Length: 247
Image (cartoon, rainbow, N blue to C red; front, side):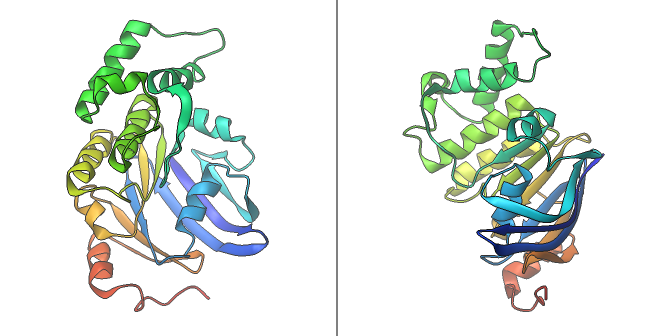
């Protein structure tokens, strides 16, 4: 079981961004992607989740052997893919509780339902773990939230949806150290032999709290180096200039 990216080429406005990216994320592992600005890190996350502004010109993505790129966005989510945005969106007029409940309802078999009491019990438990006040259930999604509250709210959504593969796009962006620890604890609590995480980050500090199995360097639209957690420390010390970019 794995999320497998094969020779992925992609453009935006006819500008090539990804240029033959290969990466395999086995279930049960945490892989981190690091790289300089403009390398294609956020582009990769958006393509995996079906953002319409990006065009895949070559290659494929398989999730547990099933082709992903031909699926609609909602079908990818129902199949078990989750994206935590770098900049979470605000959704006015839709409460957090209703948003998560609707997402869970969409995953039920046709005509299926789930128990409302059990739903709120599970929701409150996860909120307590992430130090999210329970009255946030009645607030509109991310509306008026601080940066840290938005990121914790996304981890709450992920915890309730229990995806097979989670892509965290710079989820440490804008977090102070206390919020970073809370978010990291929420991710670590979800680590499982049946779940894979792709953590996209600029900074090694996130990887102090979410320990990766593998670190990849993305440069020039390709993975140019992979290694263990020590690679992130080397990047922190030396920067990216010593790594030869993709041709």
